[in-house]
Image: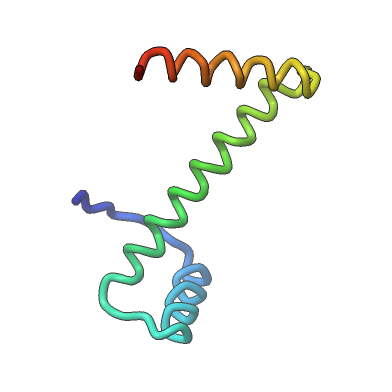
Length: 78
């Protein structure tokens, strides 16, 4: 585990702690909440990047690329 020192606005702190209290939060829930939020943010940023990179592809072109990638992975794991 790694420890972070973060600076969070007072409003955000109150909102998160109130939410956790309303939902029966226990010790460690704040860390789990932040970890989940960071993972979700990375996931959505990655998706948006892929969407932007591939926005000029037709559905057929995109499917062809997916099929080729899957075939390469399967060939490497056989």
